[in-house]
Image 1 (cartoon, rainbow, N blue to C red):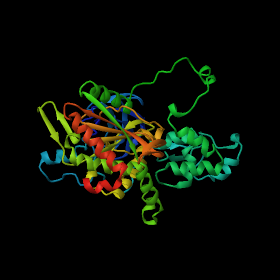
Image 2: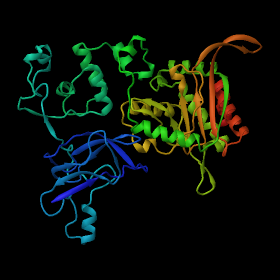
Image 3: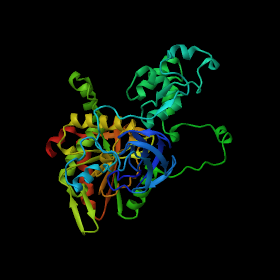
Image 4: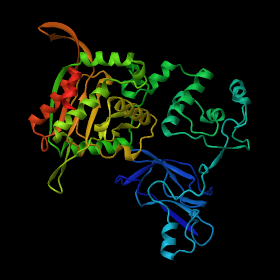
Amino acid sequence: MIAEFRLPDLGEGLTEAEVVQWLVAPGDAVTLNQTLAEVETAKAVVELPSPYAGTVSTLHAEAGDTVAVGAPLIEFDVVGDEPSKPEGAAGDEAPEMAQEKAQPNLVGYGAAPSSTGRPARRARRASAVLASTDTAVMEAAPHDARPTASVETVIERPRSTPPVRAHAKRRGIDLVLVAAEVGDRVITRADVDAYAERIGTASASEDSAAERPEYSVPRSPAAFGERDRETRLPIRGVRKHTAAAMVLSAFTAPHVTVFHTVDVTATMDLLASLREDRVLSAHRIGPLAIIAKAVCLALGRTPGLNSSWDEAAAEIVQHHYVDLGIAAATERGLIVPNIRDAERLTLIEIADALRALAETARAGKTSPAELAGGTFSISNIGVFGIDAGTPILPPGQSGILAVGAVRRQPWEYRGEIALRQMMTLRLSFDHRVVDGAEGARFLKDVADVLEEPGRAMLLA
C-alpha cells in the first residue's frame, strides 16, 4: 500500500522548512528511522527520519524547495495492508490504542527506534575512491589512475553536518577520503583540517580567511570586473526569519537607545589575573562572561528590562528568571541561542556556557529549542572591531545590550589624563515597558560593575 509522510511540526511554532538535500531517491528501499532528508527551518537544520519501512515511490519536493508544515513530503510503497510499526507496537490492545501507537511521531524525530543501533542510511556508489583503498596511495596516484564512478563498490554517504560539508568544499576535500580515515563516526571540522594539513592543501591562513563572513574579506576593485553585474540570492532559512523578526520588532515596539562609555581597565586587569590562575585558566573567562554576569545582576534591580509586552492580554509579563540570549554570527546567518536560567550561574559557569554555545553554533548544531524564548539579549559587536551600534530588539524582549570593542584611549582618571581601556555600551529597550529612568539605571548598574568589579558584591 502507499503511505504518505507529510512534513511534521518541527516545534516552536515553525510553519515551513526548506529541503536542504534528499538522502533517498525514488526506488530506494528504506528502513524504519533511516534518515530521509535534511531540512532547514528558520532556526536550525533538522534530519528527518523515516516513519515507515518500505520503498520510496515519490518525492513531493526538490532540494531548495520550501514546504509548509503538513504538506506532502514523500510517499512510500509499504509491504502489507498497513504501514510498518515500530517494535513494541500494540498487539492485543484496543484498536484505538493500537492505531495511536502505530502513528509516526510527527515532531521531527520519527517513530520510536526499533533497535539500539545507528539508523540505516542509503548507500551510494563510490564516486572517487573505494572505502577499502589506501588513501595515501590514492593521493599520490595520477588522476587518471584512480578508480572511477563505474566501480561497482558500494559505500555509505559520509556522516557530517551541513557546515562541515561546506567547510570541506571550501578546502577542496572529498569527505569520502576523510571518512576512510576516521571510520564510522560523524566527521568534524577538526577531521577535515587534519586531513587537509596532512595532504598539504590550502594553508591555515587561507582557511581562516575562507571561514570569515564574505563581508569581512577585502576584495580588490578588479574583482568586480570578474563577475556578473549582479547576483540574486533567495531569501530563505535564517535570513528570512531574521528579516521578518526585525521588521516586526522595529515597527511594533517603540525603540529607545541610550549609550554609555565605560572605563573597563579594572575589569581587564581582573581578567588578566584570572588567566594567570592555573585553576581558572581552563575556563577561559573573557570580557563577555563578566558583562553577562553584570547584566544578570542589573536585571534583578530593574525587572522591566526582563519583561515582555503581551498585546493580546494587555499585560506586561515580568520574568523571574533570565534566559540570556547571545547573538552569534554563523555561516547560516545571525542566530541568538539562550543561556537558560543565567541568573543562577556563577561567573565560571557562565564562561563555560558561552564557550559551549559558541562551539555548538559554529558547528551548526544549535537546536530550535535553544533558540526559543529568551528574556534579554547581548550583542557583542566588539569582536568585529566596532565601537558602537544601535541594536534592534528581538521580538518578545524588552531590552538588548550592544557591547563595543575595548580600546586604549586618553581619559580623565583621578584628576589627570591617563591611557585607560574604554568600552561603549548601547542599550535599546521597549519604551512601552521600560521608562527612560529605568533604562538608565540598568545601564549604570552594568557600567559600575565593569568599572569596579567589586561592586558586584553590592548588587548580588
